Length: 183
Image 1 (cartoon, rainbow, N blue to C red):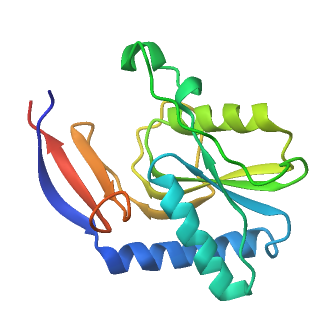
Image 2: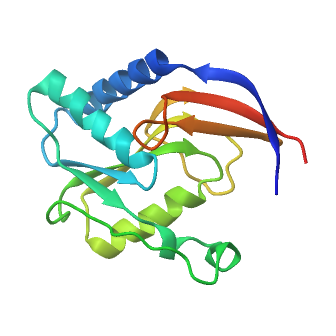
């Protein structure tokens, strides 16, 4: 089992809230409004982040965007190393995505492999007009040529560091912490 020591709190609850509000404004601006947008949270922490983005956009525009839930378990390229019997949760996408603007929402962008799996999953569901990616934290170290369209905070990290995102109701608090692997 890998051990780690928490080093720094990068974002407290207020910083998380401000980042979500800023990303909500960026989504509206880049898409010239909210027409045909569906927010899709990648399980696990991307789901509450997508719900919060929908609430922030509703505060700004007065309309609640539909929010979907995406389980990428069977699309992962490391599935055989995770478990012989992976736990698959339900994917719930509100309506037909054909011709829609999909904004995938996740907590951390690291190697890009989760985002790639999410792209594959969405493309199996339907033909979206465009697929964008919103993340709370981009920590670098990409292994695939992917980038986020919307980033709450860019955090350069060392390879021995871990970015822990805690978001209620999955966790007991809202914060982003850097921890170091101690072995």
